Amino acid sequence: MDEKLRDFFKKEQVATLAVPIDREGSIHIATMRCMTLLDPLKIYFVTGSSSEKCALLRTGELIKTACEVGGYKGTEMYAQMRGTARLWRLDEQPEIVKMYFEKRGEPNLKKEGDDSVLLEFTPDYLKYTDYAQGWDKHLVKL
Image (cartoon, rainbow, N blue to C red; front, side, top):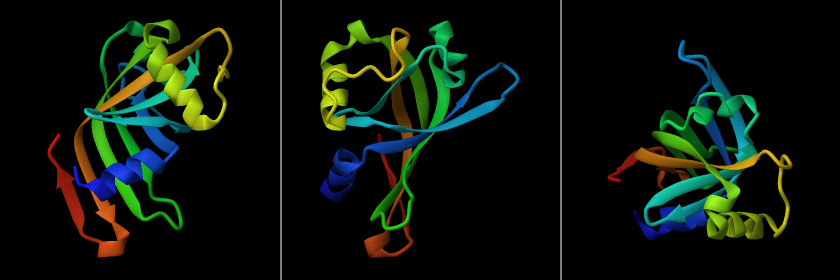
């Protein structure tokens, strides 16, 4: 991944996640605050385990999911990804949870209360557009 794309992921604090919520293929889409780790690329969200987006994730399985970062007016880049998502209890990943809330500027905040969980998205496909270089699409090998 080139340095400009790495910097983009470090800076961005919001991503949109599309996740199936039942075995029939119904999709829930949510735009949430996030934190990204780069090596390997993973995007983290804190949300309530009882929220609709977690319906299938509560089974403990890896769930095929899509995620996008950027794409709003004035953004320099736009990344589209496919991959898998899973849930962690907050106490299972304390360092990641700490980094997540520090990035938000809220070091001890739980978003939903006692049912808060860490949602981890791991892409296996990444396509991005760098608007400063035109509208060309770039694929990144993950």
